[in-house]
Image (tube, rainbow, N blue to C red):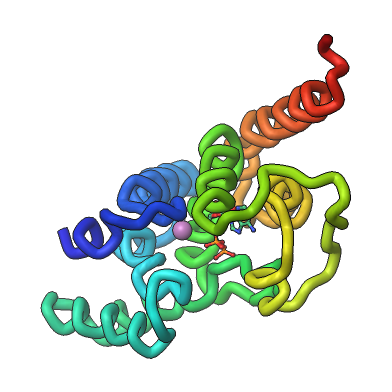
Length: 206
Ligand code: ADP
Ligand code: NI
């Protein structure tokens, strides 16, 4: 309920339904891989976007929100520490690599990444782009290969560019076989989409 209330209004693709899909994907991966603590995984999936820098004025405020939630429930310090650690470590942030320490972190990261690709991923990219006022595509804009977190967040890009800057790369960054398997069809979906997009853009289907 807490998570639903905090995230319900957001239109950047970080909404309650995203969180719900990540939770479901994460528990699915956990079951198939037969590893990881489902309680930690479910909690981390549910809470992963609560302290997000884009949804809070400052990262301190986001962190405080998470803290106040933990204070309201019965949870061991160990579990709380583990969940916080997962939330802090899984974000993509322009491709910067962070070592994930636990199986639970790897599973939640895979679940979050699966929701950024495929048909849902396409929809989320354009929803995000619309909210930020960026173009769907601009052939004069260059695809950014390496970028700092600052550039990733602030630099000029388009939603189509985002596929090359992040979405198409995600399948090779997954941690578990179950997620890699799920990613195959989603990857193909994005590739087909892009091919058709350029054909229509160039009028090749006339
Ligand atoms: P992360 O925190 O993992 O870097 P975000 O939270 O920024 O990812 O992304 C939220 C959703 O919006 C994702 O589906 C992501 O692919 C999409 N998104 C992020 N940045 C852009 C962008 N510049 N253009 C289009 N979509 C984006
Ligand atoms: Ni997320």
